[in-house]
Image 1 (cartoon, helix red, strand yellow):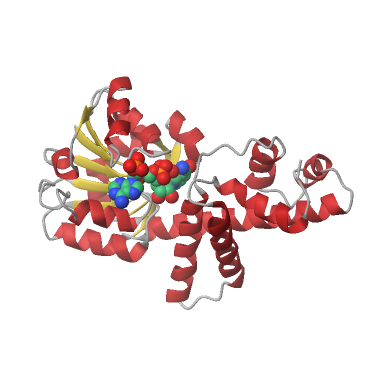
Image 2 (cartoon, protein in one colour):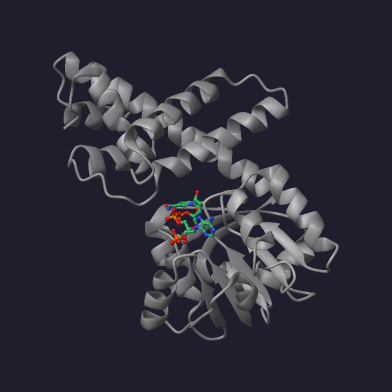
Length: 295
Ligand code: NDP
């Protein structure tokens, strides 16, 4: 099965490596060509010079780009995929994208006999490395079946969310919850530090109680208490995701003030901490505002 993978970023490269083996015949493309060349030195893959060249003979094309804006750009830009992607192929967009753009890409590709599913992933770089990502996909079952072996190569829990755009919607809401947990847990711990409670003691109790979350159980102990703050998922991308959730809510007339507030806080954090910061570094903003360190 001929596979083209476009976007070898923090998570994309870890997903693509599961396709660099039989029965797949992998071609990779990355905007910064040096990353694609480094990938091909380590894994069984050929490097394409342009998106068009990458997809020309593909059965399945996977995109893993920051947002739907970049997917559109790679589709329509100079040497883009649109004219080159073969009839009968499927584009699996693993970007955490936005539902309206995914629907419009799906409609455009359908007119050319090309299938599309939005298939964002969760589980972070740890699950990507292990090939055990959760994949939430939107689209038609017949299209998914044509791409199933590729998705199963990096996914473990693979769930049909609904029509095209549903995977994006589910991913955006999941990440909105993550953003709320990061902000709320950091605020709670900042209060407790001010109250003289050791954050390790606080987390010991919270993680045995109803206030726990992945943030309190894993992110804060492993990344904040240790002051390690490794870069695995850029804060800018989480800010983008919670923004998608906020727009989705607005479009649907849903009242979601907590999501809107968390979106505004991540917007501030992105402006303060920059494009390269990790998502958990949002905690630093709350520490600074409260003149405490959670450690
Ligand atoms: P990164 O920012 O690490 O990588 C982004 C990739 O997109 C790079 O390959 C980059 O190329 C490429 N790119 C950026 N801008 C453009 C452009 N204008 N045209 C073409 N290519 C471009 O992102 P991640 O790999 O972390 O994330 C990818 C997607 O997966 C995002 O939607 C993210 O929200 C989602 N995701 C990420 C997770 C994580 O843990 N990291 C977890 C779950 C989902 P270049 O190398 O040239 O910069």
